[in-house]
Image (cartoon, rainbow, N blue to C red):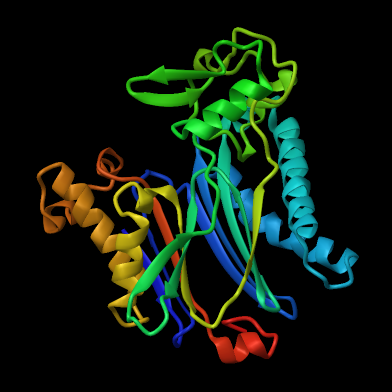
Length: 324
């Protein structure tokens, strides 16, 4: 199931649904500060991603106003933590009737273009990749601007072991996949409060979420990794996408697809290439995969959100956002 949108040269966006309920959300906002892009990849259900989509940008606006309109890494970090506090309060409210809310979460990828700086903040395993022209060679380099938090990355396992030196089961290899406490692959998110507060790690949660050891300190974090990138004249476009895309396409493949096709429809081209690769892995053609019933699509690929943002340097030099 495809939904897609293009504007005149500024951005291309597409979503393809695989889960019964679409668990991902995204948004693009613009204002005097510049441009705000968010991709929210939910897991365990759609509730956390929907909450983040409704509240993270509002919290960002509030924090920016407190800073007199200036945007810094601290502005963005405070917006993330305010969103986490708000969602935790929602879980507390819902606990008596819907304790499952304690087990839903969302990976969050945010880009903020402020003046001539791009800030990238990330929780989880979504990714933003920059397409950058290499001089006058006609070559387009692919540069990853986000830091991932997935237990399959050696450095993430090392960080978790350093934070929890007395827990031999902080990461567990299951069926060839590393998972935090043997349950979840990502180590940072909004939500997943059963992994952060002992109060929510108890019955009536399903046994698979209950930890044998007491939660003496948060196992997962809602503090994002934040990178600041000065925008250069040869920076061409940014690909923001949930991990459903990157499971099937490399950074270089994605940048090549965008660079060799018209702006309009570029996000859809990326998703079609990813789905074609997902089908190839199962010895299926793209046309066959496209006909798979929605109740079965999750066996072949995840929900995928993609936003391709094209950098308009005339507007950037004037202090406005690419799609202002």
